[in-house]
Amino acid sequence: MNNDNLYREFGPWLKGKVGMKVQKIAINAGFTCPNRDGTVGTGGCTYCNNQTFNPSYCITSKSITQQLEEGKLFFARKYPEMKYLAYFQAYTNSYAPFDEVVAKYEEALKVDNVVGLVIGTRPDCMCDRLLDYLADWSGKRFILVEYGIECSDDKVLQRINRGHTFSQTREAVDKTVKRGIYTGGHVILGLPGTDWKDPTQEAETISSLPLHTLKIHQLQLIKGTAMANEYARHPDDFHLFTADEYIDYVIDYIEHLRPDLVLERFVSQSPNSLLATKGWGLKNHEFTALLLKRMKERGTCQGRLLFTSHS
Image 1: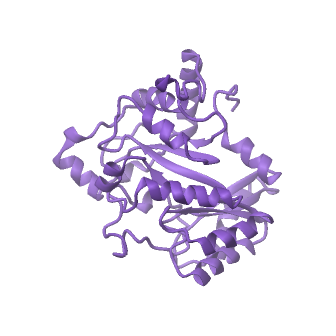
Image 2: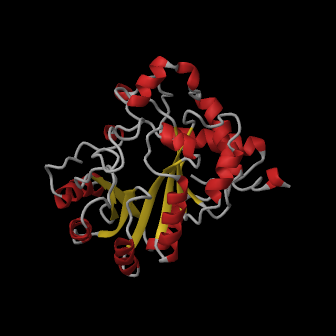
């Protein structure tokens, strides 16, 4: 899809950095989370259910190598020359003793045609020793550390039982970028307690971080989560966007992001069987097409209004 430079796309950026077309393969390496085991909290984030993004082959009874090989088979039928990134996705993928974490990363890097790592983790779970290790690898392979930021408001982070502050996010991002490691972030738009009418301040705060990439998702309520139960008790505390509302909201958000910030995605679509409320029935590429159409209609682009709210 040609976005006519309306925003900075992830695919071309990634190809430019790796030097070839690559595909991420999600794996479950058996990590847990300090927000589940009692180290910083219990119960996990109130919105969290890892079933919403794990492919069927991502089960911890299979080795990292086996998961990657099965993932490769899925893509190799259509793209036999494809190279791959091992995407450590489920839970907190730097949360274990150093030697254990390193062994898992290196197992993935030994798999044929795996040319790098994408590591999903929390900003309070990345130590200097591991960052130094990843910095050494980043000169040889593609390494992207992706931090779950979710939002910049500490009151909201506390409400969703996130277990860390935004200052910890800023510190982790700064340390990672300073070591020359590609650094990404993940945010959720529409969390309870955030301003669902005006995302300007939130977008500009996120934009102040030296991130290379950003994933943007809308809030979804997943069956059985603490947040879904909270919604059932206090629905007036929530604003669940329609697809049309969210398109305009996310455009407002994009307008206040740095033009050089690479945007990987704007939406997440969990299986309908897991949703506590009705989904939109749109695939990711269908949503992106509608987003681009609306951006053209509005005559806008990424970064167009950055910092204008303060002038």
